[in-house]
Amino acid sequence: MTQRTIKPAEPGLVVRRPENGKPLAAQGEPVEWSAYWQRRLNEGDVVDASAVPNTAQATQEQPKAEQLPAAADKKGGAK
Image (cartoon, rainbow, N blue to C red; front, side, top):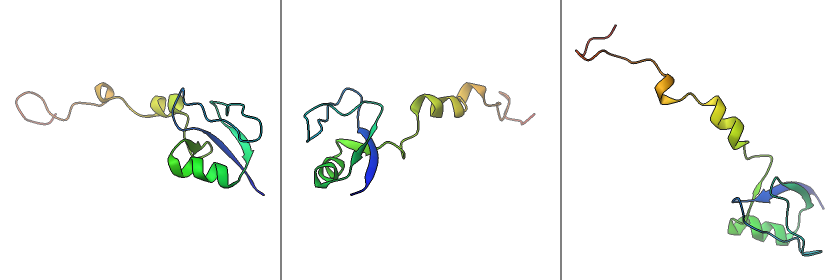
């Protein structure tokens, strides 16, 4: 079988491992891929942790609207 790194789809969502009933780590962890994990993925309970960007890092990289230069002055002419 193959391994994939997955994590719960939403913060606070508890997804339990079928082999021992322990919850899947919120930051994601590798699991042996099985029909159980495929069902969890299909239901939207888990996501592929390697495909999900770090939200804190992603928000820092995006420019904020107030940081963008104004395109025109109040009279309508561009400067």
